[in-house]
Amino acid sequence: MQPGRPLNRPSWRCLRTAFTCNAQSAQHVSRRPFHVSSSLAVEETTTTTTPVKWHLDPALVSTRSGEKKFLRQGILPIGSRRRRVALRNSPNIPFEHMPYQCFQEALEILRQDRQEKLKLIEVERGRIARLRAKETSSVEEERRKLNRVTSMKNQLEKLKILADINDPMIKKRFEDGQGDMNRPIYRYLADKKWRSYRRKVLIQRLTQMSVVPDLVSHLDPTAEVQLAFKRRNVQAGDIVESRVSEVPARLHVQVFDQGERRVSVVVIDPDVPDLETDGFRSRCHYLAVNIPISPTQTSVPLSRLPAEAQQLLSWLPPHAQKGSPYHRLAVFVLQQPDGQTIDASSMDALYRDDFNIRSFIARQKLNPIGAYLFRTQWDEGTAGVMARAGIAGAEVELKRRRVEPLVKKQLPLKKKRNLRGLAGLPTKRLSFSHKKMRLSD
Image (cartoon, rainbow, N blue to C red; front, side, top):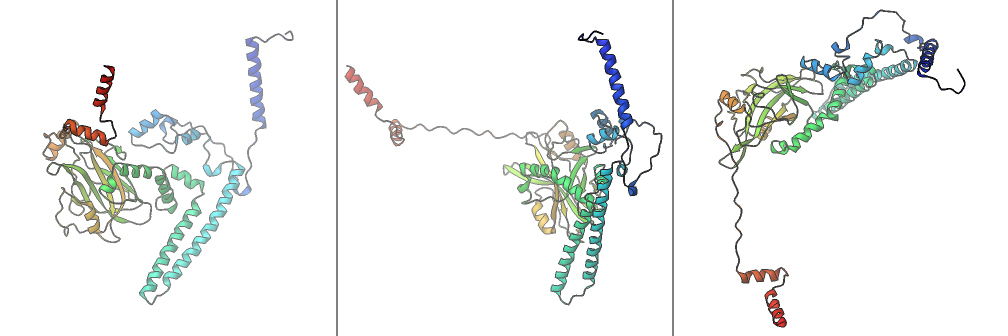
């Protein structure tokens, strides 16, 4: 080959292929495994692994079509899409046995920090036990003792969270949806995730659509509420078809503090047209009491609650008459006082129409801890839903009254001139034109 002559394409391809092969072989020769400390050394074993079909595994699927197939089957993909792609392209090594020296040394530091937090937890438990064993001589001292025990319990819960907050395995299990809600760390992470986005959206919907203060004067949600009709999950503020909401809803109420409590569930519609007063009134579509929930007991199927002991008012399908604007259906979760149940037989007769939720909360001493919202309007299935539920008025169409415009009153010419003078406008325009005509003549 003569110097200075350009290379042709076949020769350039051969040289490039040879160069890449040499570079790859050099990389394989110079590659060496990372060393770990003696206490965390992992024995290298050669095992034959069968390839996993990633599109059939919810932990490895990464395409939208594959995710939709799992969602149709009721299976949620595990973790984020980025994480599933990384797992699909990485060797199957346990997370805590990653062969990186820096990673293993960082885990050792985290283990030492956790041991320190565990010692503080034992000290705090001993202090609480000694304080509980201390006797008191007056009511005031007993009250101070209970307040101090409560504050020490809160400090103990914080120490439990700090002991596990930096553990990578804890975060991995939480992202995979395998966290145990009996442990404070998983409740803390779930509460933090809910408050970062979903709680803000819920409060925006409730205030934007004037659920607060139309129904309750103030609401500070501390429990996450989700609503679904059969397999359809409803977002806050969505318009739901009448045939979908004909069946009772299923609630998912997630609380983030330990212990079991009893709640009441109220579904109310504040947009029922009142033709006599030309306004709106409220109607209760569902009312149930004495429902037990806990951090691990979250499902509340409204159709399966006992009718005699818990359901005071059964499910009435949401509906809106033709011509009326959309109706807001507000769902409230009301916590009952500790250790108290509502006796359904001792309550006065409840009526669906003109239901006042404020007086119900005040009379039973309830605390609103969660809420949700969806809407309904007239559609092609509303007439059939009303007929099956025995609700009259499907043939009635509401129309807005036409407001006639005010007729402008004609004023005499003299009053018009006076009004023009008060407004600062010239009133002798006609006389000025006469003078001009005379001068021109």
